[in-house]
Amino acid sequence: MNINSTILWVFIAGLLFTSEYAMADTYYINSRWGNDANTGKTKDNAWKSCINLEKNKFLPGDSILFANGSKYNGGFVFNSSGTKEKPIVFSNYSVGADIIISTPREILSPVFVKYGAGAQPAFTNPDWNILNGNIFQIHGSYIIIDGLYFHDNTNPPGSDRKNKNVQKLGAIYFALGTHNNIVRNCEFFHTPVAIKIKGSYNLITHNYFHNAPDSMAHSWGPIAIMIVKPHNEISHNRFMNYGSYGGPYGSDGGVIELDGVDNDFEGKDINIHHNTSINNHGFLELAGRNVDSITVAYNLSDDRNQFIGGGSMKNVHVFNNTVIRTREPNVDRYIFWTFNRDSTFLVVRNNIFVFAKDIKVFGPYIKPVGHKRTRVGEQVHDHNLYFSPGNPDPLGIPPGKGDIIADPLFADLKNRNFRLRENSPAINAAVKTKYKNDLDGYPVPKTRLPDIGAYEF
Image (cartoon, rainbow, N blue to C red; front, side):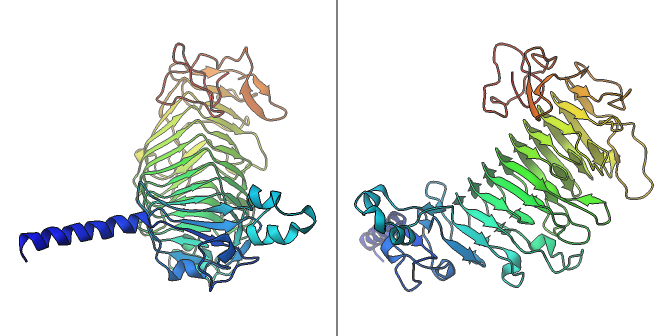
């Protein structure tokens, strides 16, 4: 091939590459009106189900939109990927104002069906035999899932350390090797595992997870988010009523678990910040060996069981959280617990702890007999506020520098408003960290010391 032919080939290849990325399309899916034989490329030619999402290849920049008011049963495997500049987006659509304005009010009903209106698109998979209960089984990267509703997923038909069926769950399931995916503005109701993350550099943000009260298996309660791989971020979410009573532990499940039972586990570099957790059976369980570099900052945990517990927990940084442990039945009488004290290293700073009088935050450490939970004992701790009326020793170890034992003077404790009153001893009593905003989004002050806890006054 001569040099002119080579130049021509490179030019043609470049055009083909450019055109591929320029040909991004929008696809519409409407369960109430569409047809899977349609092109899917206009609202008038929408698909009906998710079957074409498995059959077709999608390009970076493509959008896949589900009609508001539509409902879907089952799941699908998605193998396409976007890019950093052009992710593939799953989201919703509604009828436009132009159509509403041009349509007489008395004949709007079929228009809403055809073009979408009402609640977020709803997805359920109650059948374990379909993709192990997964709905969005994602094998691609640079994908955004935005503004969808997932509900009433199946439990596994039993689970143990051989079949590991719990590890296969996830309404949204990010498969091994995936990366740079985002789930945002979604709602998850009665999903025993809402999101399973076996990839890295994923972001789960501004979602609402709630009401999963039933056990998944004999020793597993429902868990909103299960994480297997490193470099993931969980932020600005709201969690309510995850967890179940019964089983070998009396109570299990909760908000987030680093899933050490999964064969591919590598629990490192997880950032969990600015989340609100209400009435769950635990906030964070680091259930694996060699967990390292976990940050938990500016969260509210008003839950029934442990704030953080696990086995080997190295370099766990716990900053500016408000932790309330006054709900009963409270089976787990720990704030922090571990199976392995010798490989547990925490830095606990700028937090408010309010808890029942029979609980101690850290110690004293008592070496367990066998594989049992125990207090974490002496850890780096400073500038925290502890309040446990009737408790003569709320820490279980000596206070650290800047630690305060006092009523935090919340705005409205009876109604569980844990923001600070103007005379709170937590005000201007913390030390600076890298975070710029509190849990409400208000700026952390630059010219004075910040406040202890998740909320600035």
